[in-house]
Image (cartoon, rainbow, N blue to C red; front, side):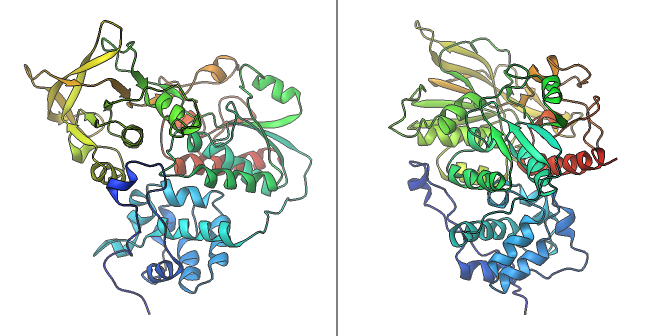
Length: 461
């Protein structure tokens, strides 16, 4: 019989005043009993709207039914038939605007906690199963994947299942892309990412790190090496700045740099001598998930005051509601309807204050959101020693500038056929942030799946 509770089973979490001083995972996960109780809230709808809301079409009611029956390994197998990174997606997907956003239980209460159940299944499998992923028989065809982030890993995994000999070329010294350099340990433990990557290697995917395509090797050279198709999943790692005075001062970071030093270079561990300013007062400019991650990291690294400075209101912030809620609980100070206009430094060229203006919301702009307008004469200063710019990223131009035949749009993103993900050059496909600009992990994964299917069809004409 269905559990008709209007609320999700709560997720155990570290207390805010404890977790804002450590990098341990905030959400502690469901127990078996909690997972089964939550799973019984699913009505197993005939038309399965939740599946349509998932970019990788996880068979949600099927796996949830297995959880309700206590068949956790079977549930995991159902998830991984379409999703190669369930432990990741269960933690960082914006379920509220995707699968859970379509759940009929959300009409008169809270939707089924699909993300929490997906995470539970993946974690249960990692803890209780020693089975390795099977390595399919080779079909003799080689495919190169550029970038070991969510899009590249997904494309590689789907192609490997079909027997392709896949090599991933990753610029960093470790695989994972934004999963390892961008998303903090307290939201996504890196051990989880490494285990997911190991599954792909068990399937026969080769990962070559420290390989910068466009410099170490070119796309043309990959074809000369016998690769029959190339997938570009190189992400959007080029940070944006505001172009205001003082952005060249010591203590101004892009969020990409700050998070990379914190996460990939382990600035939060004493045994790592990572060059990073031990800030006392920090202003993070932006209102997305990246801004929340940077602010929460700064707090954990010892800052007394951390401000989120965002030019629109709280309701207009693009960050997940859960991330905003966690940031507020942890003592992050929100300065909404504020915008920086100048960063001022001391005699040593270090950040001293950030000058801001107050904003008010006017008529909607082309995005449909109300346009922020400056309140004249509202200038004020925040005393800070660090400013982190989290206002977006764009694709690095290296690959497109060294490869003939690749068209890009005005934002520097690769132009692709939306159905096949093929670029303007035959045999070259692309997906994820390299195509969309900075977006979500699950959308990048969906593009990787789409491209893998198209590559298989292309190579079997």
